[in-house]
Length: 161
Image 1: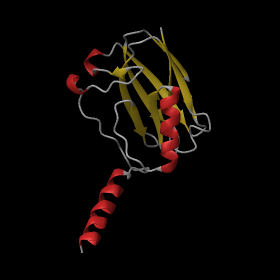
Image 2: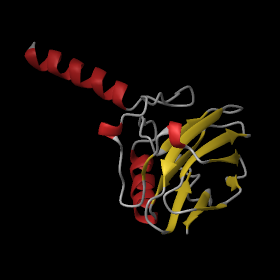
Image 3: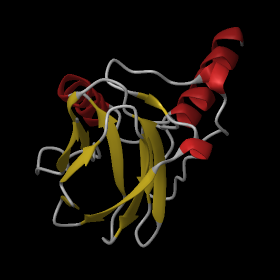
Image 4: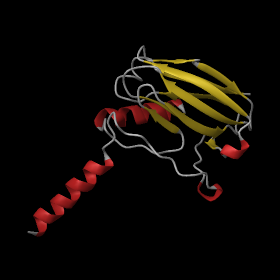
């Protein structure tokens, strides 16, 4: 009985953890300076301090438009991403290494749920947002990590000057 109960609890929690599919809409918590997500490349931005909005389109041709974005060092940017396609797309900010590793993980768990501040999952015809502060200079990437999309070239570049 204990084994059956343990398995049932595990199955239920595992299904919740990996359930996002096409109907998933990630809800991001409000900005909290004490819980800011920092990455090696940049950090979550405060929406009250946005200095610029960058609009990007995602399509079923597996492209972002524009594919290259230049920002100033220290700038807080609001990315508004519109899914012009008929399938789920996402925008994930990261280093090339982080994106590759996450893309491999997505191949193993394609229905994995996301709610990180550096990601926006966007259903067809909808829009999503990411607010991010670019602190160090350099080149960083954004990509759609839905299985097959990254491999098809759905990648862009952020140049921080």
